[in-house]
Amino acid sequence: MKLTKKQEYELLASISARGEIPTKFIYLVENGAEIWDRVYKHRSTESEMSGAEISLLLNHIDSFINVFSNSKKINLVDLGCGNGLPAIEILKQLKKHEFDFTYTAVDISSDMISLTTENLKAEFSGLAINKLVKDFEKESLTDDLLNIKQQNNYPNFLIDLGNTLGNHVNASSVLTNFLESMTTDDYLLVGNGLANEYNPQKILSAYNVDALIDIATGPARDLDLYDDNDDFKYIWNSNKNRVEGRVRLSRDRQIKLADQDLHLSANEELLVLQSYKFSETSLTKLLSDSGFRTELLTTTKDRSHILTMVQPTRYSVA
Image (cartoon, rainbow, N blue to C red):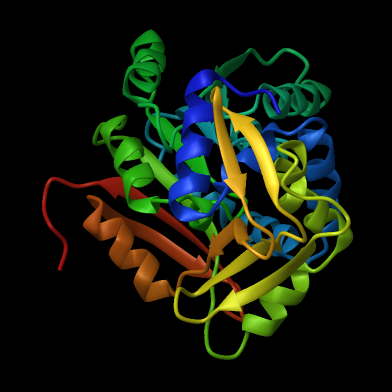
């Protein structure tokens, strides 16, 4: 993995104190962007997670961009850009409706941003792409996003798609980071999976594919905390309403991280992936508690996925 010293210390703290590797580190392993791209495209049928979100987005995209119809100008800010494919669908509609727009790719992984750049250049050869390598779980977006806005005075349209909000260790702090980078004419579009009492096993089955196991275990493997003799499984944690990927060590491990020795014993478990699944009510409440007002909300017919468009508000929402 390509880690800064700060990220090494973060990993040391999370493994030693909580027994977990934060999910965001899956994007930093070698070839992580390439593997993730294959998984995304594999899941891009309408019945799969990526495909369900794209289908929902395409069905309602005119409503989402219509809120900007008075200005016909947008700075599209792609938070956790991945491969950029959802953003491409939005940009196509902006172009169709003759909007002036800019595009900014934000991701913890420079490889992900390179992948997005390649995909966007294939669709929009003349598009200037702003690139921002940022860990928005830990680093403020305020200066960067306000600077983008000051350059042209367009409203910022932040998108956080790809079922990633539930992957953060603290989704509330991430939303606060988004909020603090926005003004009252900006909007945020969030997409995520939903859970109810009927679909946990269906959700779990979508994770139990070889490529997603490779992704989840990638950081542990890079740290010499996982090999083919260790046990890995995805489980549904009903108490926390989330998918968890867990590694059980088959033998003692001694590694060096942030210039410190770290010892783990055989049969210890590591949480290497977490993906919280909201309900419509819990996501709306989280957004409200974080300082947002819901403007538009839609779900798939089976209520397995949600898109919600929100705006900063100065007032508490009951």
